Every structure is written in C-alpha cells, then in structure tokens.
Picture: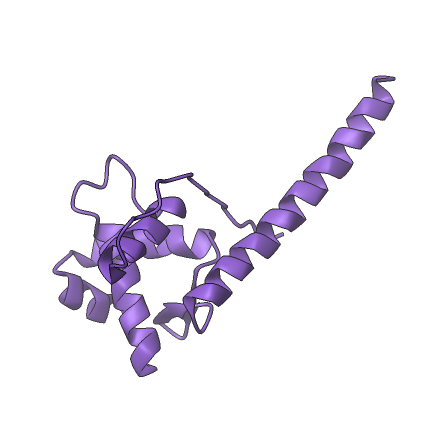
Length: 133
C-alpha cells in the first residue's frame, strides 16, 4: 500500500496580489516548510520544480541542487518529503511535479484528503459499532 502524507495548515491569505506571497502562502498551507527549515530549502525546491513545469524540463537531483545552491543530500531529503505528499514523482532519476498546474495540485490534495477522511469515517463507524456507541 502506498502512503501519502497530507499536511494542511491554515494560514493567513496574502492581502496583495503578489505572486511570491501567493506561492509562499500555498507552500505554507501545504506544510512545505517547517520551523526547522530556516532557509526554506523545501520551498525553494518546490519553486524550481514549478519553473521546470513551465518550461517542460526534467530535473535530476543534481540539477535541483545546482539551481537552489543546496547540497544534493538536502535536495533528496526534501524531494522524498514531497513524494510522500504525492506532490512530486520520480521517473528514471528525473523529478517533476505530479500535476500540470497549481489548480490541479490543490485538486489532487483535495481528492487525497477526501479519500483519507472517508476511510477514517468508515473505521470510526466500525469502532462505534464494536463499542455499542
């Protein structure tokens, strides 16, 4: 069974129509960086993958490391997290987003969230039945 880690964080939507702030809001809402990620390396990797999507480029971990000025180990660590979230896929040593645009990304996350909550609801129903609740 393939696991998908879903992280949703309620953030404050940016007030201005600013692409960088909107990307940061999206990244924060999807939990792409945490308190420990002081230099926002996961978010920087996400941005590189978005740019590659726009140009239909395929990137290796070395390509991403060079563009973000991060070590390959750091890049691999964050790529693994993004793959766990179902946001990134690895095909023949090339990494890419699993979708063609940001709306599709949000829709993919929504579908995964609905499947997960439906499964939780079924399990909760079964537990209630066993406990006579």
